[in-house]
Length: 324
Image (cartoon, rainbow, N blue to C red):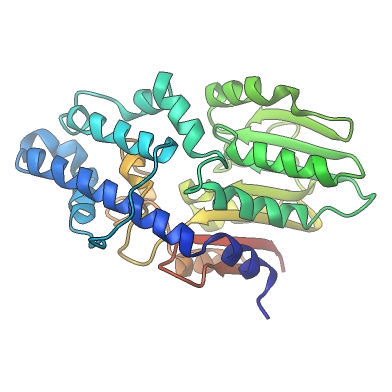
């Protein structure tokens, strides 16, 4: 019998999803080949973007089926097209990916991609929220801290699910390191509180020790992190710090995109327009493999229930982490 987390992951990563992923890689690989052929020889102008260019070279050589399905229109295709059009200026050092992705049309496309309406990303949100809902007990209050909220895709999914099962007060604190992004998300979700759900926002950097009044040691039943912790400057240290925020018996639930050693994640076609975290310099991907995650959790002195999908390459990890 499958453990709980594995059953959740395998219910979301199926053959239909694998076909969609193949379509995304087919499109990203084609765009990468066009970009590399045009800009690959201009090394002097590309010195500050060398790692992004190397990623594009690897993606352009990636083998995909000649019968790859067509990626349907939607936020995933829009994001790939946005990045394709941005790469010439980015590789030449003429444009800033942060400004492109977090303002105007870029921000709207970002929101759409990371929402549960995008079938290429929905499993990350849904897996974490399914594990979260499993922690809800009838008549028992719950305190939840979400880190790395971003544009609120996982938050929206969580609130929708919690509204259906809450029978006691739930305190939900959504946090992000970016105050401006958090304000934008707060404006969108500020009306989501219900009679049983108290909903608040607060800036918070999970790479640092908690100093905010609402982020307190030993205060939470659940810390929720969806595709956020791969950005930790020191993953074991961040895991230890986040575990200190948990009550006795509390858990950290993390859902992450992952890849095998030396492999890539398709999201990086547009994420590479952003600065690469220092701890991933020189790596083939900004994301980790499952062995990296297990090693970091073990180094943090924590226990975990880790699951990755049974079919296909490493795609998604769902872990519940707690104190030993």
